[in-house]
Amino acid sequence: MNSLWVRLRLVLLIAGIFVLGAAAGHLATKRWQSPMAEDSPPSSASAAAEDSGDRRQIIRATRKVMEQYRATLSLTDDQMEKVKPMFVSAGLEMGNLSKDSPLRFGVIANLHEEMRPLLNPHQRELCEEILAKARQNHSQPIPTGAP
Image 1 (cartoon, rainbow, N blue to C red):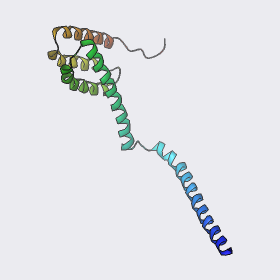
Image 2: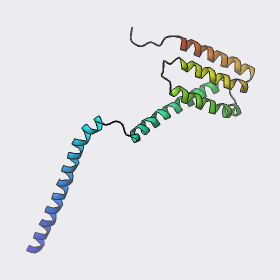
Image 3: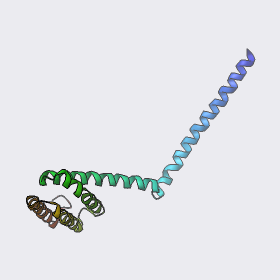
Image 4: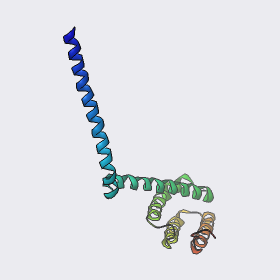
């Protein structure tokens, strides 16, 4: 019985030392890791994750614009299939430009020019109205602060 008690205490002591060592190692690693993470440039994995987030945002915005065009121009399913790659390309181009870039209107104008042959006369008129509004929006200066 006495020998069993000694063995049990020895096993508990070794397990306790193991747990304390693991906790100390975790705390030490966490303490030294934080300053290093701030000083180092982003890793390719974190840059890829950030890129992936930007790409998802661009895709969501492109889908939203496509649905607006579909509703405004009453595009058929066949027309949507044909213009979808055009929208994706334009969306990626817009994603690479800053919000106040004067080149953004050029991307919109190019998209409209590519779409034009696929549209019927009524849709072309509506498309011209959209382009005129875009031209007006891109010619106005973007407010940068509160009045």
